[in-house]
Image (cartoon, rainbow, N blue to C red):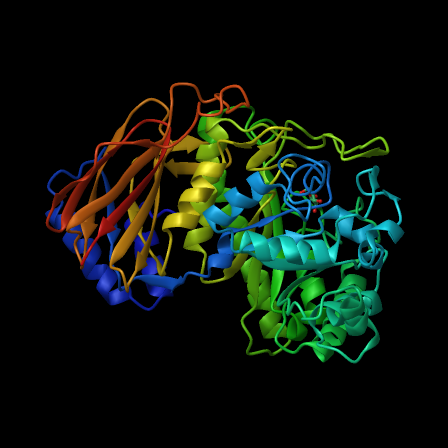
Length: 537
Ligand code: AHR
């Protein structure tokens, strides 16, 4: 949450044990800030105000058997763009270059009707089936082994989901055996028989998908799911004991069972899981009435969702008398409201959910990245949903891969956020938004790489009319050099990148911040998301 007044600032600082320092800091800042008036913004950065060591899995993504995500997105044998394994070289190259740390697979809703055994073994023997989640034809030509090979080539790690809808704990633990046991058992030897001698050692697993949703195959009540998840977790851990397991939390705050689902689920499985999932898709229609000033504030509702789920986790920790801290896995988040078509009409690789993103979506995605970063003490995994073709940062046609507008803020985070996340204090003028109250125009976060002495600052300016100048007040380690100063902005909030015009919305250089000892002056344009990287020593 951006900090806009003294009380917020002191309370955030108290939460990390720095109340006395914060008191004097705030006082000093108030007294010495010469230009500070009601319209003047300031940002305070102190390396001592550390939130967490950044877990790079915060910038993970997701590829589901949905529409053209797999078939035509990352796998297209026969295409001139495919390599000898049938993988699209162009998407593979972009994903490898940007360094996506982990990718969730194979669903999503798809996983709740999926039998992983249909997707392994000789391709000629794999059955073609109807996927009931998306009413699409699934040929099973791409399955677990292809995904593991693709991950290796893409330089990423798998976040595997197991089927707890039509599947059960036994099927799930057999998949873990197939993936992680070296040899000497039915499923580990099956993997070897299929030509994969070495185990994959998959660490991160999701225990089903959105089991609170009536749309989900195998949907059930929270206590039922919680017991199912607990049994599954125990059976999986009997095979590999160093797994990171994620239970299904609420599909979003819109659910009638929001929070109650999470509480009842965790009461059954708290001790055997590591995290609970959060999902959320934002829109600029029903939530906002099409008002972009409101839309760009929606990342504050992500902050709220995280804090509410965190509160439930901590409440259950007390109830079950556990010493363990439960983490959060925000394993589906993005903008999604235009391409809602989820019916494949029994076609193979239909064009489903191919959302086209514009500038304002990219700005919100920037704000959402800020929200994830400032909660990185508890959110250890988050997946931009998704990566290719379905609700995706990347779109393919027969000839090329297109980087959509939302690719760029995600790319910035991947490339520039390293080390520690810092608890940045932001003093900003505000504007009123229905249901949200006073919203700060500026939303800023920072990460600091202590080894390299680099500080990355990401700033959303929600002001649609005016550029905003602010001062960064460095409490220690003032910068000596500006390494990067870039911005995503433009005159048209609805501008999109298309195959014909792929560079309408791309990052541009902007005037570098003015360094002056412990004070740095920065100006960010109206309706913008900015990246600054500073060298501090
Ligand atoms: O990402 C698309 C779908 O959205 C996923 O399959 C499901 O989990 C969510 O409802």
